[in-house]
Image (cartoon, rainbow, N blue to C red):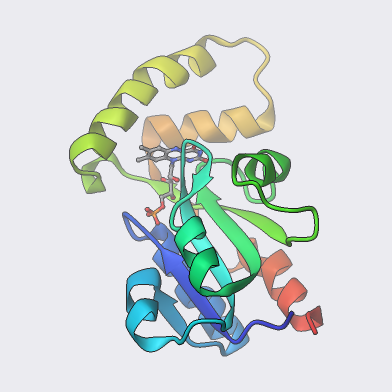
Length: 170
Ligand SMILES: Cc1cc2nc3c(=O)[nH]c(=O)nc-3n(C[C@H](O)[C@H](O)[C@H](O)COP(=O)(O)O)c2cc1C
């Protein structure tokens, strides 16, 4: 299914950046899920990007009720291309659904309320467990670095797989 728009949900802006970069690369129009509700009619085929919270692609269920989702991109803390099977399971995505993971960013200062609290707790629990682990995988190293130091990993290069999927989609 060839998508004709990009729809996204972002909390602190990293997913929005990816959506906009992808729009530049593909020439597709881009909408936040909220904007799409007003501007993009039901039934359109879309590439959906959402930030990851506890493994769930935020906004995906709502997007899937309104649009034909042609591909799903989850933006989280892990390296681009990692955890794709976990994402498929946690979001009940069929084997036929093209799935991509993109490394976004983390900045505690951009978080508010309950999200800030959750990430503060996560830094102390998951972060500490990772820090104490002797045999970290490169993925775990990347995750730990992101949790400790924050920062953005958004880059055009991380979109290579999505862009080539789009170019070959029919
Ligand atoms: C409460 C909370 C839970 C999160 N859970 C996950 C997660 O399960 N997996 C992951 O890779 N990243 C997780 N993250 C990290 C975000 O997905 C990551 O920072 C992402 O780049 C945010 O995108 P945004 O700027 O578009 O909101 C979590 C962040 C928050 C605040």
